[in-house]
Length: 345
Image 1 (spheres, rainbow, N blue to C red):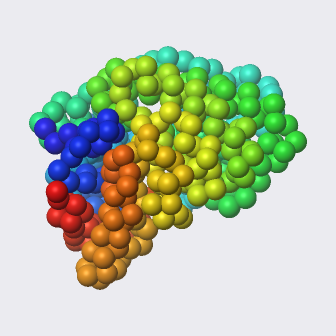
Image 2: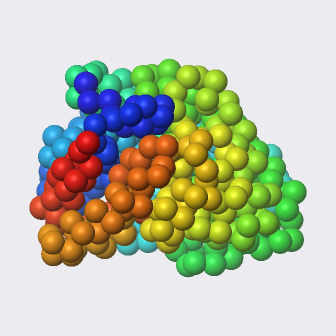
């Protein structure tokens, strides 16, 4: 089995830099689009055979060194009592957003196996199919990020301000923290169940942490994440933590306890490594739009990131954020091949 990603997570030496790509299972792959033509996003997430198939596709098509569970960061919200749908061209929608304490009080924290059995079955299928290939990374949205979507409720979340979330933090901080605490309990249980189902590593995505100044991140996002990571580490698997907009938050993030810190494209990787210190590995951080570059420029950009990462405890090559769905597949493969070839020791 190609376990280079797990070795990096554990701080072990590898003969080349492993790579996987955020949103590697997605519309950039024609194989994914064929499945999507016969279904819809939520049905795919809720059908283990379909979710497993698209989770595995990038391993076979692209040659990545890890699969990541095909799911959605808002999967955890429905079992808690929210009504999730996806509107064409507008993304996730809740008809019952959280806006007051009674809304928080109505939310439940079920057992993850009870609330999301289809996710656990997907993991069992993928782990079985990839047994002699590459590891699977399980994941969840970090508590703050999920809570922000729950408060916004509709396509308003696409605006950069996340007005309702930030107003609640400013005017009713205890209310927002009570929501985050409840989300965190289910998120942690959900990831523990993924580990029990066979995921050998898990990841928390704080993709909306960019909304917060350092003071608010330290109050409304970080404590829950740190608590969750501490609990997950006791399960004996590596934990990866990705923070979008991390450049001004490194002094806080370094204390998260995660084995690997995912770094977005907004900061040079060597600068992030210097701030994070020698105790953690890093993941990242190619600009997704570099994948539209001519091959020679793309290869130079890959080499630059590999060079900047050379001082890290370990490095998993990735994008700094999610891959665009119009990315040319041949460029994705060229990037992966360049990472493998240029990083060989």
